[in-house]
Image (cartoon, rainbow, N blue to C red; front, side, top):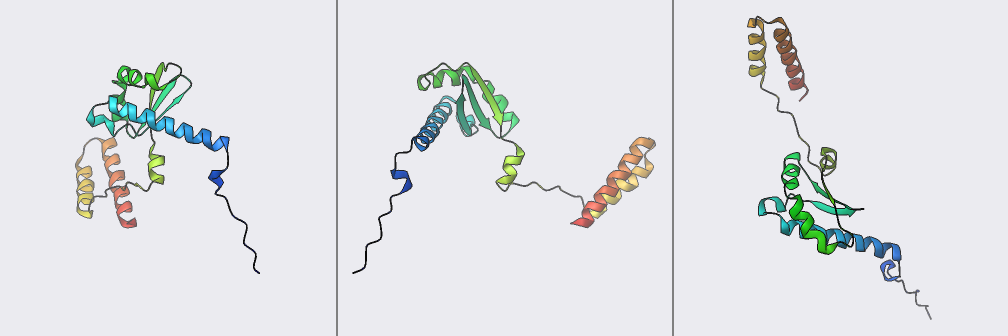
Amino acid sequence: MPQKPPSFKVSLSFQNRTMAYFYNQIEQQQRILQRVQTALPDLLKKQAKHCLIKDKKLLIYTDSAAWASQLRFYKSVILAAITPLTKTPVEIMQVKIITAQTRSVLGVKRKAKIPSAEQIEVIRSHSLAVSDNQLKLALLKLSATLERLSSEI
């Protein structure tokens, strides 16, 4: 008679205080983000990507400096909106920018736009007519660099 294999319990079914703590932190961050987004105008709601509270500081993450500047104008509104969710009062709000390095991991990569060979030749021919020697050398270097980059493509 074949024996039954021992039953396997899913690892999350065990009491694990560490995992419960992390799940609690994630839920708190999501609640704070939702509260922040409801306090913001429609245009800015989507620009607040992540929120968390560290010590007495609210950190809001966005993806550009322009949106970060706009979010800072709503500091008092945001801090007032999250007050019911926090045990200790939050006194400081910082807006941080998610860097380009983070975006490149996600697959967004920018490419340089290289002008056509005719446009590179126009830059080179105009540089020969320039009377300022420093500008003339800069334009010649630019045309040489653009020519080299266009040949690499």
